[in-house]
Length: 353
Image (cartoon, rainbow, N blue to C red; front, side, top):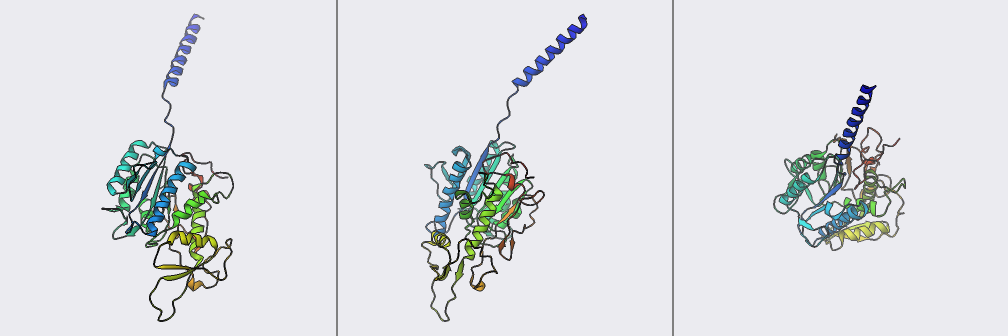
């Protein structure tokens, strides 16, 4: 009896010691979300495209802060022109500063954190690797891939809205990494406008198709890629008459919304002129290439957006004859991870049944 009591007392002491040890252990650091916005150099900072880029940078920052809920200190911005008074401050986008931003992120990010990379601007495809145009030395796709691989987290979302993004897609695709590219084929788009439609997917709320109050990365991609190609297909190039003098290209733009965006994108441009049609199109129609009249005059889309989240880089087909085919994100298919990811939220959503 005496031995049993001693045994019970010893057991109680051990349990107490273990309990104290567990309670004294430090709590794991909460997972966080951080973002980096990179905007490249333009040939003419006063051009319409440079103006569009500045607009997109500001709206992406607003999206990350207001919609995604990131603190200003968790958002870094590298753009063509530095602005120390901005919130967050804007640093000039040079290769050295890109490397510096990634070095800081390498120290700040923890396993399980979400990292969002937004790329805006003008990319080029050269031999042997594509580049994002920056002041001084350009950012090579291989260099960016190496910088991403050195981050301590695998939970990475990349939204590359630049032209020639397909070259980057090939280099930095990786299992567990969501990569969206405005252009899916090499050489597409000297100027890419996908950023506008990706932003509007969040700003208008139209991406939330299931009306659950949450916009997943897949929902935003499907909405943006669909709206982007429709914008191109609502434009008709008016053929020049034989022996006509040189002049700007005339483009007939159908639907009021398409004309509003055309004016926003090209205001001040000297090489294109918008013509309002006598007969308009319904905004709710889907002008899929090959299904409407005047096919030979329809402006060809320069942006076949792609999404890759399985590390396969298999050229996932979201287009058939220039008609958009939304990704469903089913289990085992491209888009499955994007369907469970919300920008600003490191934790994945539950799998759909």
